[in-house]
Image 1 (tube, helix red, strand yellow):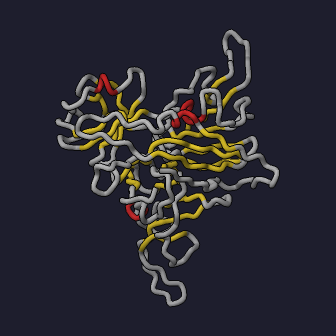
Image 2 (cartoon, helix red, strand yellow):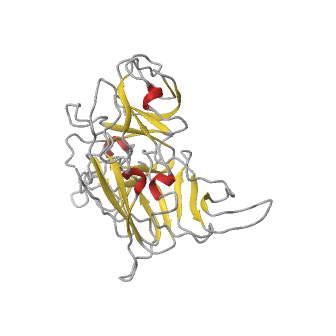
Image 3 (cartoon, one colour):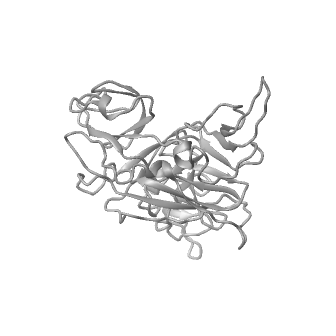
Amino acid sequence: SEFCDSSQLIQPPQKKPTDTAMNTKLTLLGSAAFLGAAASLNAQSAVTAAVGYHTESLVTGFNVIAVNVGNAVAAAGDFDADSATDNDVDFTTLLTADTPYTVQNISTGASAPVTAWDANTLTTTLEVAAGDRYEVRQDQTIADLFGAGNEAGLQEGSDSEADVLWLPDGSGGYTRIYRNNQTIEDPFNPLTPGWRSVGGGNVDVADTVVPFTFGMFVQVRGPALDLVFVGHVRGDDPDDDNGHGSSVAIIDVVTGFNVVSRIVPVGITAAEGGAASILTPGSDATGDVLWNPDGGGGYVRIYNNNVTIEDPFNPLTPGLRTIGGGNVAADDEVLASGFLVQRRAADGAIGVEIPPRLDL
């Protein structure tokens, strides 16, 4: 199947593109190599997930995006023990050495990196129980998503001139990655062209993993451009009775701002994505807030109101509301590919829901 999401995702304040701004649509080859390939599954299951693409339009300034497609399933089945063991597979055959993978517990929605494996057991911090369903997928990296040679067309230059990818580090900070085109022949501080991180010297970061649960900021200093992400739909599983695999993706969040992924490559509403459970209830000043890019340089800010105001002119009742929107329900607000969750509660986890029977 094929699908397309072309929403502009922008962090204010922004400089809007002019009619002469260049928009270059580039097909990214990293994920495309997996299109049409059947997933490598064990004898319990053998299916091919839906594949397609979604487009992200970037303008000069900060853009919030997420990659909502991924690599094919490399292994899947049911765990036989709490130690992430599946006696019906041979992971040494299905998985490639020196390759990053993530395993998702389809029964709970949680996921974690795979750090090692033998024939029947994965080494991971993921909590599992006997009977839990799972999927293992190869992680996507900077080189996969934007090209080993920057085929995506991001502006290159020094760390003060190039476009910058701001990747959440999981602790409230960011790793800033850019495509360097400078050569500095210094025996103590050399610099050569390639993917580098701000403050990271000449270390090649092309293999930096981009977790599927997080979004990113793209700081565009050059011309506006389109990015096209190609790959498999996460959670699509024809063997499941609702047409999908996991019905939720569990994402760890910290107090403050978190850039998270919508997970699926089609527009779902705030209600369908589980905003009522994602956002700790409160007023617009005390509860968590979902900052959804509006495609025009700002955000629609959604909160889970638990305050009742019995005012005939300005009433307020509990439910999803937008800041400044009064008592109008925000359930039908369509989520962008990536959005911000302003966590006012303590560090914890949220669950982005994957609605059943998505129209792909």
